[in-house]
Image (cartoon, rainbow over all chains, first blue to last red; front, top):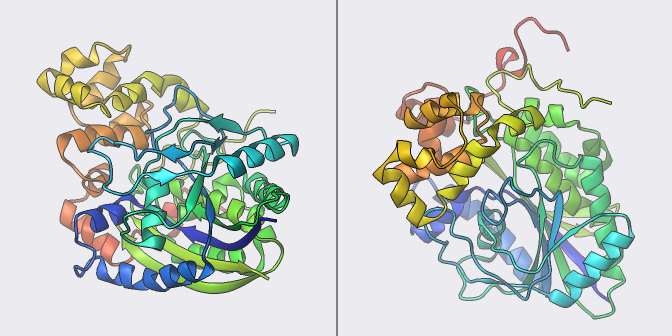
Length: 279
Length: 131
């Protein structure tokens, strides 16, 4: 039987990927971020995952406004790295796990989550930056990855409570999979940030601390945050944190906090990294 | 039931909702076209002519030609799309963020290094509003 052995919440700021790709990760601006994320790499390696279900959003790369699926699951055997307008990131292409992905698609749809299925799809920094942060610069990613893409670009994204319930359904589906697999779940994006308008650069450390604590001890409380509360208190793009709740829903009621790191700034953004183990 | 729009009073924030999606679709799809290197070359060669390929309003075209980053948001631009024009110009996200809030680049960078734009009663909600 497959089982979920860990959950990772991780920001996916493109500048983090660029710092690794351009070799500036040890300069004074980036060194504190990358030294702070190192323990997460060690922790993840120790879990020896076979597959990651990586919950993220696309940024006008695989998808456009032409069609906007709320939840999209990648069932391909391989996902190429997207050209986001300045060439693809120099990272390995992402290998999928079609058998588990199709199992998830079937089970989630029959569990009343109307997933869109993607048989071919490039993946952008939303997916590759969290992999880089938690796996480092590697010739091949150390596990298979099932992309689960959530719309947070066209308002409204799915609600926090809906995302949390999706995570719970993911857990049920994983535990129903016959093969013996160790699965980790990523929730990406956040933390507080605003990329647009006269309020660009907004960062709310108090909100982020509350959110990190809630992810560990009281996710039900976080599911009650309204979209307007996210946008007002964590910045218009902070609303991405609904994706963290999908990860948290997949871990079950109680978790152990294995590692936490919070850093400002990464470009325009407050970055968070949280490593959780189901108990 | 109409969706609540109780986010409209968040200062300096342009939520890409149904209202903006309705007017901004073609503007944003123009931006999306710049993912293709061939299109980036055509746009750079003659910006006005390239924009004529898309059914944009006069206001939208002007905002693009003038690189009025804030103005683009006000006529239906979505930041994840309009930023592609900036990448085409060789600008960074932080350059554009500074321009949208009318701050010199180094001042904006210093604000971020010092912890970002911290919450205040004024930037969390309209002045005088009670929660």
